[in-house]
Image 1 (cartoon, rainbow, N blue to C red):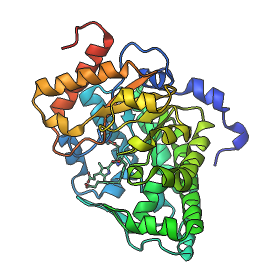
Image 2: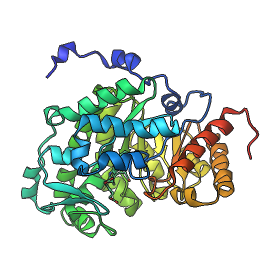
Image 3: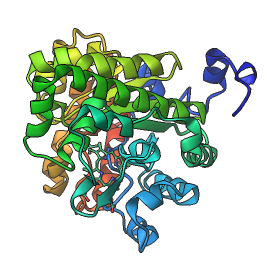
Length: 364
Ligand code: CP3
């Protein structure tokens, strides 16, 4: 461990941080930018042949814990597409595995937990995350940041609800029925579980930021399965804990979920600079629902990457224009890149966003 007294102050860390003056960070802070920054959720991964080649024979979680591989995979979409940010190649379940939860990522399925969490005794299997348990993650971030230069690295974590859903269901779930049963059947246990997960997510984000990540994204991917009342009462307070802990570090925060149209105001108020918007809600509506106080990120439907170029081009230009109504806009998809996406289309989208938002070309 480093001597805490020798740790630079948050402000010093901030000015020295690579990517702190990048277009992405400035847009997140609602400052003027020369063009709309663009990156894609799941930009590192199966849509790239160079990724599949590197991953051959290496299980997902092993890849996530091998710094040379993480740095290389994280760099691939930056080199290929010229995106304005990298996102660390990792997974939301990495910190859970690091504290000792027996789980695996099964290809084509997702995270699978050997013994699902259902009772109070299960809390004993969820101790706090110590930075010493993820030295490889800090090393991965340092290596990647050194390779990226001024391109910012986005660190990330799963939000308590989304993590809890994997732990309680034991794997991916369509209806989250066991999670909701626990949430309503034993609210005290639910709250204790989420408090533990909030601590783990906050510690995981802190490791990434202290190693050099320029921004963070909190993924509450499945929060859209909740009613607004349940989100506000049973989930938001825990996400708030995570976001507040990162807020102290001074890097911009992005808060994202899928199908969260009804929750956008609450997710924004949980403590973020940027609200992630999926493809179901138009950006101007998202701006209105969040009182015009937040930068927005989104929101091209990832399925449209399969449409004829003219149709896709029209929609991309429209999103760039709609984004101008927000106090800050980061172009992204409404959810992750689908595995069969043609990567050359992603490169064209990056070029198009830069061209039309840079203002030197008439929109199509
Ligand atoms: O490019 C990036 O976005 C960075 C890497 C990243 C991965 N997972 C790599 C990955 C990120 C940010 C995640 C986050 C993640 N993981 C989320 C939140 C984002 C979202 O999609 O809403 C969630 C819910 C998970 C859990 C998870 N891990 C799922 C649902 C899956 C897909 C299962 C499948 O095979 O269809 C994974 C596995 C995973 N995570 C892959 C990748 C590249 C695929 C594994 C492989 O390539 O073998």
